[in-house]
Length: 325
Image (tube, rainbow, N blue to C red):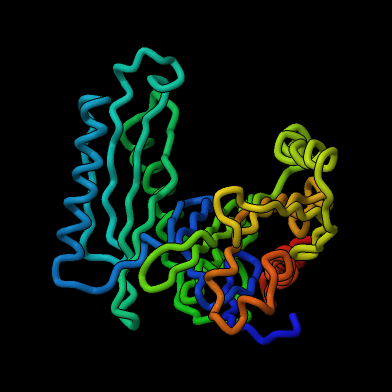
């Protein structure tokens, strides 16, 4: 854009995006090999009761599980090491489903301290499923191996203020994660929303990223088939997002005359290519959210196009992929 609208760069996953200053991250859900994290709600400011509050929060979750699977309980609690750990055993022995009663199931929960930031981070370990039957020693050993792997990964969540050139994934502009290996899949979804005067506005953008294996053609078709329908009825603009070609569709918000809704659907996704994942983008930009001096100078369509073209692979974001090719 020729007009210098006040903006800020944000990093997410392997990418960066530039957004107007009134847009803020509202959710950031990442699914990794060994844990899941929702970074917006995961980061907690230091307070005297944080550990006690976390224990209470997990115990409430367990009580819900007990109502469904009687016998479920916390079997391990480590409040000395970092991250803290609570491990829930889900009693599946009496389940009528053969799929469930043939496995031991555990839900791990983690609380990581970041002393230099005076913050704590909540993460949920991947559900651990171990085939029945097992000897006591065999079950304990396998469970320890699985939880140790999760602990090692969660310990690698680190504070790196953006911009930086670290490998792996930006979780937000403050935290980054790299396991030291190439994760089996990229899978994350981020939403930014307009906030002015402490209130949400109509402006928002959601980006979902998922890398696809070579055998996932049907999944790709199911996600991109809408583009074929849209092309039949609506004009589109070809836009390259993060190095991937796709089509941008915009329309007027029927209930908001200054709002422009949009969708970007990829045509350049490549199965089995981690540099060409499936990226889906939709949202709305309301030009009323712009500072008054810009409202007559920038159209919604122009701002949407500019935002999409700002999405690029960040420096360092593809290093682990390239090193494993």
